[in-house]
Length: 413
Image 1 (cartoon, rainbow, N blue to C red):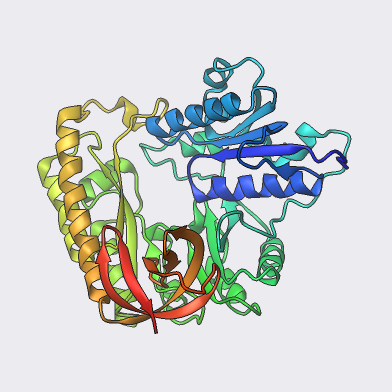
Image 2 (image 1 turned 30 degrees about the horizontal axis):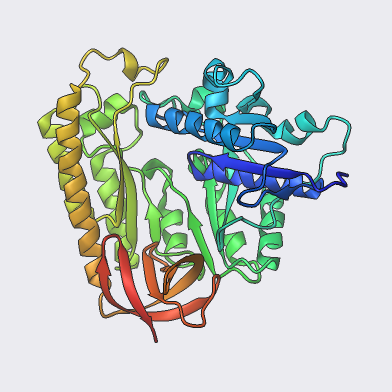
């Protein structure tokens, strides 16, 4: 056990799986006696969990490494994650002193740093900076969508044991967490996912339960029934679209059609009319025509998404799509992105406007801004309310009085 209270600092880029993994690393370091470096303190050990899903993610990851190096010039730097798996030389070029831990060895994080010390539990009991906790239930992917590099960086799909997941969630609920977000690289690959949701819903103390995202082809009749009936399951879903064009979806090697997607939305809203959806959309996929783009636009108008995460197509070496001949010119891609972004913004505004005048419960966050405190509705919409005597991690009822930018405005009932 470390006795001189060494300091650590961390940075994470990318998905909620990365965020969960970094929290597990923090927990293991703290169990070994390390403490988080405060602002202005220099760390002895720095850990960066990187992303490589797009060129921008790679650039952000390298920036995060440089940032920690500049702030902590004497620290040991350990870089892991997808960029460490894909291109370790680009990280080593930043500094030869950087230690690389590829994804394939990430579960040996503690043993890599401290080979002579028995590793502590990797389970998390807190989630730094959040009043809700993300839990990874699955890793890897074997879908091999034509644009996606993740299967090459994360490996084959594999799932955690259900009893381990439930044990970890019990610990978080015992630490007063009220909301659990289930995450994974491809959550729908988890065996009997719906049964897991039922078991989590039965745990004492669970107030809210969400999935980080799911593919339409992983939703069946029982999932729809359970998602609309469990007491803790929030009426919101990040249902991945990518494109509204069946021709593009086929070239992407996605396993659903526009019709399947819209049918799932309809059936969930038949069960709960206020069910909210967010999604991912890729603009400018090779061969995408104006007609294809218009079909994506029509789906956005039809569904009324609360949030669209919009990505310009990013060619990834080694993927099938990188070899397609009909690459969309960058100038055209920018115009298409702007068009879809405007539609997505209008869609989100309509969703927020529908809540004005309604009463909704929110879970307050630790985030504050002046006299405002932020919270999250069951529909995954951000609300800001006057701070008053409230703090983070409180469930309160508010009346929505308006909205501005991407936030609802509320007042305590």
